[in-house]
Image (cartoon, rainbow, N blue to C red; front, side, top):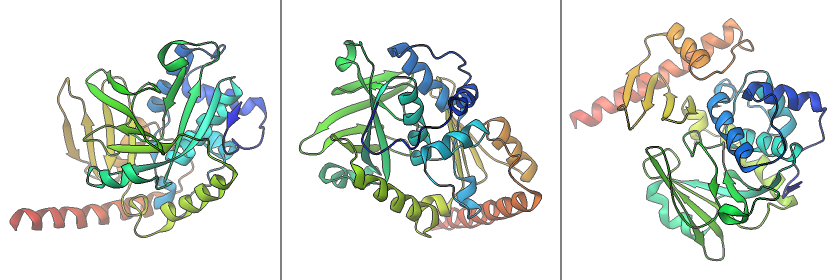
Length: 305
């Protein structure tokens, strides 16, 4: 079952089969801790956090069924798409999923994160039926941060290591929970303890509209694609391709042109490009290149200053 706002209509099981094929998991089996971990790992590795369609001015809706169909067809999305569809899939597979109103904050906004929840993030907690270990079988599950945990975190206070990365969860009195991952693109994430109610659906839609159309939104200002694996994070922001890998060392380079850009987007990030016309490709590259030139000029001016 899914608690909180609706996971959407009940689509044909064939849609979930196609979704699972995208994840490389043909036989997910009965709900289990191992199964839940495998599903989150696969989601982060195979369905990119990306804003191609937002950059092209045609942001897709956040209905979970629509998102699931888009993922099956090779697309990605951001938190409302990624966690929304994942919640529906997990529910379909028999996990007990709860959706929560959340917020993402910069490190400079720590005081805000301790006082309230902004509502610009959809967070999930999942109870594995029959599992008693690790917080009575309840986990914080999040495939919508781009560079967040590779595996679920037990929903209990503490610090958790996954390879070279460290994450923490702590209770927020009268609010819910706070997740910390210093130095990441989402260093602070909080979410309300209670399930997202019926009003949250409209609030998520309104926030999605703002994030996907407002000139103040980072999704509108900057192209981004991220994927997570066991060792690190691949990130493409504008024309800058970086790899965060504490064990082997971080790397960064500027992609030379549209051919290299689209090859990385499709090959490294796994974002199918068959929905992009030649006009779309030209428009996206032009937007990315112009934003990069502006960013590079500002960076150079800052260094000279």
